[in-house]
Amino acid sequence: MLSSYRTFGEPSENADRRMEFAFNAENVVPAFDVPPGSFVPRSIAEAAAAAAVFKPVSINLSPSMSESEVALSEHTLRSAMPPPGLQGRDEFEVLADEAASALRTLQTTTRPSPIASVPTSNIRHGASPVNRIAESADPFDRDAFDAHLASVENGLATFPGVHVHPGDAILASLSAAAKAGGGARVRARGGTSLVLGDTEYVLMGLAGSGANAKVYEAEFADVVSGSDENDEGFGGLAIKVQTSRLARWEWMVCKRLVGRIDPSHAEGVVQPSALHLVGGGDAVRGSDAAVGVLIMPFGDHGTLQDVLNSYLRVGKQMDEILVMYYAIELLRVVESLHLAGVIHADIKPDNLLVRNGGDDWCDWTAVRPGSWKQKGLSLIDFGLAVDLGMYDWRTVFVGDCGTEGFRCSEMVEGKPWTWQADTHQIAATVHALLFGKYMQVHQVLTDDDGFKYRPRESLKRWWKTEMWEIFFEVLLNFPTLDFKSPPPLGDLRRMFEEHIMEERLGAELRVGLMKQTVNMFQQLREGKT
Image (cartoon, rainbow, N blue to C red; front, top):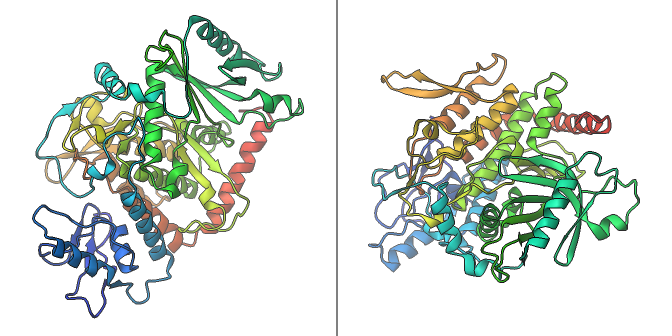
């Protein structure tokens, strides 16, 4: 049980009957038998919306409901009043903000585009365990992957920002530039020119590489030419070079999310500004291009892995309050992604850019005052992402993402999975911050002769062990549920937020993050990165 039952509100006096909304870790359930046609909230945010007199976030529509029953449900929700003493309090305002955001998301129709998939309105969130499996699918299977790409191939090249560059000459030019751009002291030599169509970039050095891609720090050539040669502000772009098929898929998923994620959460996904399809003979669609080049903003403050490394290289561990802060921000980002019908499937410190914008360093609170909304985390690398809108809602997945240290137990054991791909990776990422090492899990027996997964590392006795036990237990043991039943990431996030608020740790969090920022900058100046 994540938290005790709580009641958030009831309708005003002129409502036909009293309604209470009770919550636990897994479901939202009414505290009475709900008659047909009654409004049933599916999250704390939805109940907060009712209490704050928002428009209805969702109505439990069933084929048997008449128009009058739907109207009655809406009227009941609209007549709800905030309970005495709750309106104006920080925790309530946070829920109200979330409810407004959820409302906007559910009311937003996916923007028409050549690469639009099944509308996310078909992906409804409610508690319904998988007991009627429609089919199983391997989202990482090459043939299935290519079939998804083929289904949108005709419209991809017409999408704004996509550029096709056929021929072997430009492919060879790209290969030479990428090789030179990753060499030693390339920045000191003024960078390496890369020309793609009408645009010239300057590669400043290799920022990172993996099994499937290389990422370069870069800048537009005209920006470089107009700046002082000692200017350290170069490198506003990240140029990702990978196979064409992976680049096209990543582009499509990111652009689909533009029309799905609420604008207030848009900063949680790094959007590429351009896709260059290089090589091959198809000058119209780029369907046989060999290489895909994605252009996107470069993270000024590095990745979460860079933050972790700044502690490891001096033999220290991140303060628990900062681990909680990053856990809150990671849960917030992935929660919005799940609401949009996407499983990332490659969450790890390397794929989380740190946002540290704004100069208003006031004490942190759950409503994120001052410049706190400009700080946080943003996900990158959607090459393995699973768009749930492309599958029946009862589908279960098989297959392995292949990211060592971040594969869920179901993948390791060859069992079906859905949301566990992300829940395990959230736990593994936070574990790395908390312990300074990769997570390993093991099975422990339960009272009913079953077992559950736990991290092998023991929690320090001076930590907030009860919260961390809940955090890891929920994320590492989330069952294989259908697409309508996402994990309770919002509840976990609020658990940490409420702790920081109740213990008045906002100032400590602010000071800790400021010190971390200064220490990372000093290490950079001293060439220790």
